[in-house]
Length: 468
Image (tube, rainbow, N blue to C red; front, side, top):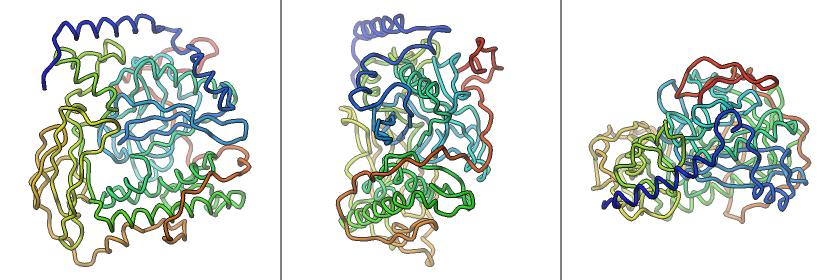
């Protein structure tokens, strides 16, 4: 890679510093109004600043979406933001210190908002929730914040978090007691499901897809609970199907049948199973391109997007990108090579793609770091990472590839069907009220990168920690 001249780096840095000086700091930053252009966008979509909000995030694509309720009682996409940084791997957070950004369904309450963050502004996702506690998962202070630095959080630029914070704040002011955040490993497309079909996290991801499908077919927030140690959606207190949401459940089951038919077709065409291994999370290519153009002098500094005192976390990890490992299918048949490592935007000019073929058993082990390849040749996507270790042979009494691929949750009796056009959102009457978790929500805590004690809040404001 050839770095740009230092003079260009300085010009970029001065321009970015000027943007920072225009950004409110101190006590005023949490009261930044929603930008006029965003309010105008709301008006064109039949929304207002106090209407309810829903957040969706996608690690693999490094995108965060803000949805708002329109005048018809259904949610519509307001705006999509390229994500500046997330850490860890695809998969849920399981224990304190694993650097994993959480995956699941979380509630952001007024008490979750932190106007005094060391990472400009932040709000707590509410990890661990009832599902996480059921599975003994540990960790705290998992946030969405600014500064483009992550150690288990979803990090945006300061300008982005100021806008998102204001949108969530006004929804709370309008009476929404909890903003649902749907944190996904990737967009639940047939292509992603086919490519990641041997991942050890796939049963969990399919459980998340049930709730995602409920939302996508109806554009109504699913009611979330925990039944039999799984996420359950639109269920009664005794885990039975809510009779008021049967229409949504039927439409989601039909969508699932269509998606599974597409997955089966993709596998039949030779779509390879892959596993992505990140050095330490990722970011949207929009930000990576700037890092690559800034030169080594700027890598350890704030690269346009956050507080000067923080700096972009692990810029080397995001520039190298994930390693894409092609996983051999059961029975020893090696699928044809995949095309390239997944990326949320245009391919970087300096990228190189290297792949390794390993048995499916190795991929299901879910190890974060690869070792020595057992079959095939290959490379590393945008970086040099060792190849995966040789694995023991697949046990004889394993379910077939198609059985695993087409498995369904115990809450659904849907069976695969022929491929059909995706259904339009169901016209429904939004259910009254919000669901609550089966266990009480944990108290709001400080941010992950700073664990100092809370400071006193201004009169009338929620108590928050003077961190992240």
